[in-house]
Image (tube, rainbow, N blue to C red; front, side, top):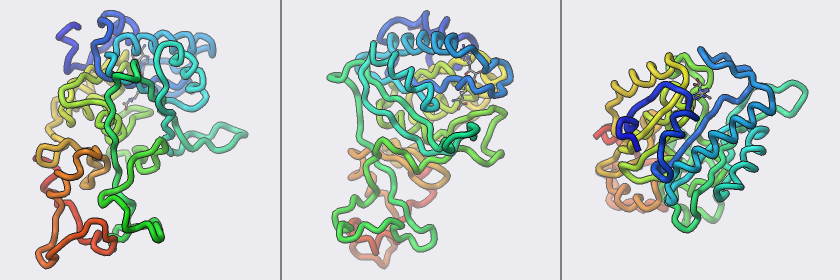
Length: 311
Ligand SMILES: C[S@@+](CC[C@H](N)C(=O)[O-])C[C@H]1O[C@@H](n2cnc3c(N)ncnc32)[C@H](O)[C@@H]1O
């Protein structure tokens, strides 16, 4: 592997660049390609002939699998229509793990059901060697009172104090709506979506490669989580934005020495195995002598102080 690629964002055609990367050298690959929906990118024309688009997709998908290590994973994000074809390509060269449904409104498609989710295909190179960590998201709570929003009935006592294990349906991560959080890019992904994927499938220092990095979501997520990264994009303007953001990025997404994912001031993803250590950092008011994390009534007292976000 060319050392110059590591921790950089490179402008160029992803197929050409990936072809220069040896087999089995990156830990995970994540792709969020153009959806062929005539989106207005600053350089790329998102309007390929149906067959040509799919032939092109097959080529970069095969490259992603080739360069991923046997312990590694391959993720591809798109609308369900294209994923049905991608799954066919991936089934030839990798192993299916999940079709993750990301609940997020998408553009109306004319006379049809309103599309309301994207998919993320999750494949592995070798199911026996794959790296995977169970992850948790926080219980949904009333912002004011801290009580759980969901009625778990008689099962409350057995609840995990932080929150449920993440399933293959993700409803707790929203698309970037506010323009102050957006760059000039038509389809930027939220950083904590990528952080969840990275926490689930990599360790510190592992290499994360994104062939369509846009304005840098994946590489920022990787940097915040202490992973190495390679970002590729054909568009010089997006590459410059990504590089600029990376150079200013100083956040370490940690509580103590534990990698977690934040959105604003709340932890949104943790690794299951880290909970025990992590629970010691939760703020417990002085007047509370004993906190039983499994008691829902006390949960409203448990807040993570802001100061633990950046250490
Ligand atoms: C859906 S966007 C990715 C957005 C990115 N996930 C983000 O959060 O900013 C697709 C990107 O692919 C880039 N692109 C299109 N063709 C490419 C190619 N052949 N090689 C590399 N990048 C390409 C476009 O410039 C665009 O930024």
